[in-house]
Length: 137
Image (cartoon, rainbow, N blue to C red):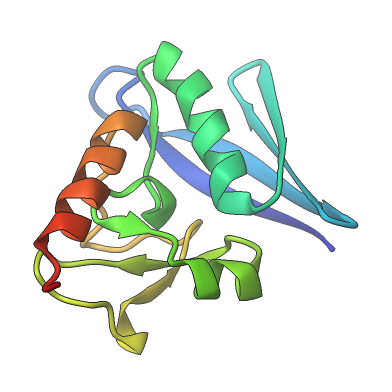
């Protein structure tokens, strides 16, 4: 499997500048390789799933003040373990405080939509922990 996705990047330029990154996805056995090309730079991550690889690349993009405009970088999106295993981290769940995700809450991490709220990695992790704490025991 080799696939490419183009994702808008926000936060790095002046108003009206549309920056884009091209993500190349490759699976080799149990390794999910993700390469991000933007400006004149290349970032690569090899992980067990694509969500984690995107997570690693996002930390590098943050150095340039950039956020990918996609569900994988959205505050309220995180992979749920069984979905992640089946999709190699390409599908994640939109979550709402106090509610379990439904099948209609599944999204491709490289897609975008009007409900994407791109945030830095640590803020996405904080939201996930807040969501977990909000669930009924």
